[in-house]
Length: 234
Image 1: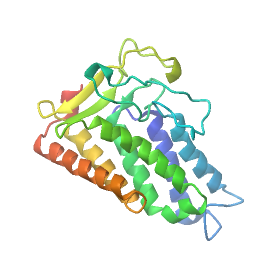
Image 2: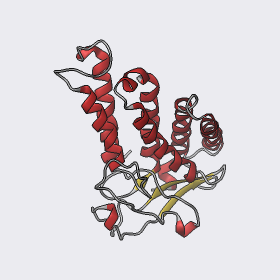
Image 3: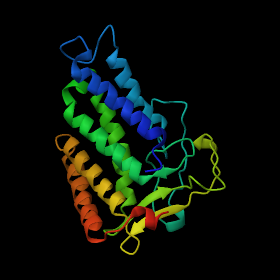
Image 4: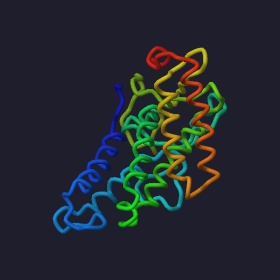
């Protein structure tokens, strides 16, 4: 995958902090606090990072106060709502496939390390980060055989690395359908929603069931209409 960008860098930082703690580098028996390794602070900043990558209308609870609303008309050319989600990097493109992969791993972090993350009061923030991504995937899945997979042009002549609040570059839309499938992207979106449904199962039952329903639909789409994502969205 060519585009991994800043978003995946933050994801791998989060996993490194968690894996290091679980593997015994932290000296405390409970939680992520250590006089030598400050895992609590590192974990908090790794999760906070995702708020800096948010797109759309930001809530009052936004902690990265230097970030403002941006790309609040995404989806308008096709009369769909594609507001929200995460920017991949400073080119301000939203790539659905890396975003879904990110949501998948964030969800498994919340599942596998629930007690450790909860012990330092970061679980709620992690749930919020996951939901910000899953909400966008749900919006992108506009029909059983339609999934929007990219907003903006990362390789466009109009590409400009700038603050998203100042963005004036085209917000072109790309999607996969039964006629132009992208099995990898659809299957990863299904995995992301499935994993997230486990996270929210005991937190928000209705939302969990909605995630699972869309996950099943996306998997059927990926399985029935097989084709390379690169061929459909070069």
